[in-house]
Length: 192
Length: 192
Image (tube, rainbow over all chains, first blue to last red):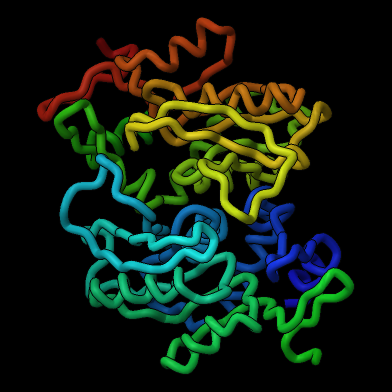
């Protein structure tokens, strides 16, 4: 998606450790117009016929997920990252490794919000090692719901998480796949 | 806001410890149409002339914040709850007590996303003891930005956080203020 790639080139910053900062428009300050354009692009790439929900994970996936859900006229359901006192039993759970926080994190979702009659698009803002999406797929599969596909804003292709999910048969559509990034240049998949 | 009160009466559940569960439409599964209606209601209650950003805190405030930001044509900036490796220096910070997690939490926001030229509406999905909003107000004040007001979906009036903020001069507009809740009935402010 050219609009997103242009934005990454213009405003993204590459930090040591292959960290690509896009927090001016994607995951700290949010450009909701860009989210809306991405929601429309997912609608072109996926067959959303019969969709009943959009699924994502807190926190930074929620903005994109909310705009997508509104665009498709369905609820957003988001997985949470830790057990708070406000969530009782009846949970789908999946343990993932968070590279951001360098520890294991359990994704949880109240089972009442997703069932085998659901047909969902899973979305997230970022895909690097793919742990968050792997956990979300696991949770949706526990519910018996059908997964239309996985819609991602930015994939760090060189970290392999997206291609691992594709090799497992998931339909992963990332709107910008970064294959190489250093302080001088960002190269997207298809441009090498 | 009658639409929200009706929804709370119809779908809300009261758990021991004065916990009011509205996770079917507000903060786990999200009804984005309701978020849009709330965004329009805030636009009626606040003078949004000159607004430059909507400010909220992760995680469950983000959905409402994103829809509000799109409605008003400005970016959303959300405070985060812990320091990850992806956030460098240059932070506004405020320590709050999280009653959900029963521990101190530091709200942080990269200082580059808010400055004294900004004029912001602060929004959140829930106001109980008011700690999250107190921290958000503190962060916005550190930036020198002007606060138009605090827009809240559901306030638990009996916990006093909203009235403490009002007593400090903040313009808090909550779309439903619950004064009493038990398993038999929910009473809103103005209905006692």
